[in-house]
Every structure is written in C-alpha cells, then in structure tokens.
Length: 300
Image 1 (cartoon, one colour):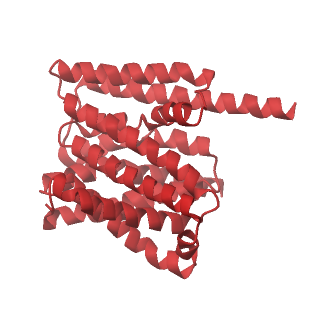
Image 2 (tube, helix red, strand yellow):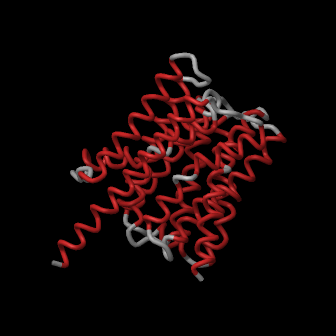
C-alpha cells in the first residue's frame, strides 16, 4: 500500500509538471492564454460533472449557505485571474522560471493570512522565505540584465502566484464541509465562465486545432491526473508530503520543456530558480517544525 501511495504521489507530480510545457505548446500553436485556460477548465468540469451529479455532491454544493457559495465564486474568479497571468507569462519567460516563480504561492498565502486572518508567519519558516525571495529577486535582476528572461514574464508569474494564493485562502474558507468533487466541479465551471467573460479583453477567442491537443492534456493529465489526484491523496498522505512533492514541479517542467522543445535555461537563471525551490523547501520544513512544536505544547 505504501508503494502505491508513493507511486501515486510521483504520478501526480509528473502530471502537474506537464502543465507549463503544455501551456507553452498550446500558445505556440496559436491559442491565446485565456482560451487555453478556458478550454482546460471547461473540459475538466465536464469530465467531473457526471460523477458530481450522480453522487449528489454538486447538489450539496449548490445548497450550501450563500456565504460559502460566494467564497467559492471568489475562489473561481481568482483561479481565472491566476491562469490568465501565469499562462501569459509563458509567452515571455522560460517554462522553468515561470513555474518556479508561480510556486512561491505559499509565501503569498502566508502574507495574506497575516494581513487578513492575523496569522503571522511562523518564526521557523522565515529563513526559507528569505532565501526564496532572494532567488526570485535574483531572477528579476538577471532578466533586467539581459539574461534569457523577461522582467514582464517574471512579474506576471508572481502576480499569478498572488492570485492562486488568494484562491487557496478563499477555497479553504469555502470548502469546510463541502464534498471535494462537487466543489471542484462548481469552481471549475465558474472559472470557465469567468475566463469566457474576460477573454475579449485578454487576447480574444484565439484557439487552433493543433492547440486543442495541448488543452486536452492540460485538463486530463494536469488538472485531473495532477491537482485532483493530489487532492484525493490528502486523504491518505500528509499535507507535508504533498507540499514537498509539489516542489518538484519546476524541475519536472524544465525536463519536459527540454525534451519537447529543446528549451534550455541559462546557468544563472537555473541557479536563481533552484534558490527559490530550496527556499520554499526550507519554508515548508520550518512550517512543519512549528506545527509539531504547537502540537507538543498542546499535549503538554
């Protein structure tokens, strides 16, 4: 059983790591970022719709209190804005850099939690946060200095990280007792609707036949085989394991981009990206240690 869990976690990481390269593939085929995101969310929602209706989970979500539905809609809007910003960043930055920067979302979750929920960042996690910020700043400076990067792309990836942080905070408040499949189906449907509404202002309805293949892979492999599988695995493995496993996404994205397009990252940008990943690993470890201390203090 333990081997099966490890294999599933590995497959989920492989699934999410395909996301960046498939976005870049779809953009190269002529689709606009917002339409790539729209197709991904719509297809994911449709694939989940039948089990969500059959199990009664979607009905349970629709009957939830108005405040929960409002938070779920806010989570969907923020997810739409995240995809728009991050997928647009792929047109300017390398797959590795854009993915590494968007993975800084835990830092923004901590910052927003401190501001909105008065939950300050744990002292043990501060060194990791500083290292990750140094890595992100280094990437920005390298991009300004003429390295194979783009300051605009870097900024869009970080904006995408802020939006996804807001998405997770709203989702955390909205989920509570709501069933997972019903919640995901509802959020994906609303996200697709939001993307459709903003599409005329963010590149239009540009989609090509070759790009549809990439969109299908994004929905089936990345959303359902990656993110949804990770959500499912949270019922069997700890959130710490999932958090650490997801740090492999930028590395996996870089490998896939190299294999699929021959995309290479300059050594300075690679070092900057790895610094971000190391910082995030330190941050996650610090959060884990702080949680253990709090649990021990309560038991004592």
